[in-house]
Length: 345
Image: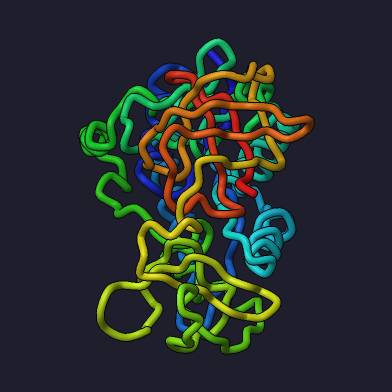
């Protein structure tokens, strides 16, 4: 059996992960990653409560427990990246960057330096022969968020929940009487609990009001409080009056203008060819050919042709996809295998 360090967030998934590894006979240490502890105006960061819950489960299981303080690195590698991307007019995914830079790099390296042989997390995913595979529970599958993990990191990682559904995980946690068995899942920004992205960004950026413009007519329909807060395909929060619903179809960060349309078939909303930047392949670089594509977590897999044009990877779709947003990730699959992906240009 191995010396395994389990990332324990204070939730039911990581709690059961630790319990299953103990039952399998591993030498388990629980670790809480202190990535963020800052309170925001009117919003209390839940880190202390989550830490207390993780400690309680560790005591229940009779395992050692430690705290890794990554707050400085997290701010530099995840938060600053996220804010810069929004300021540039793109829509990043901080969960993906957290996995790349913190959980499967910084956490892994620290655990190995302190004598661990493996790490484990409560992600819904599977590893087989050094490859990242989709989880049994297609609704909870988290490989979309893990596509930037390296094959070296995967060789040192256990995902004990990959073969279970969320309901099975809850039931198994209840059977074991785990403290977190009925704890609700956190929502919102990955590191600030229930805080919305707009509220979080408002603490770090200065914005100016600007016009919301109907792109078809050029008519000013209303005002926004910062183009940074709007993303392609967005419908809610526009406040531009009655009639047909308007959708964001573009924005000009220099002019501070958000463009909208009532036309769901607006060409800016649909793309059949998607160029990628900052491409990462988990194992070997795949050959150009036909694969499956996921553009958002829980979005359906769609057929895609992966092509190479000089140094640029291109995705060519049979059917145009809606709101393929600059800064978001496009993840490529070959059946159950997650091959990798890149950032949408």
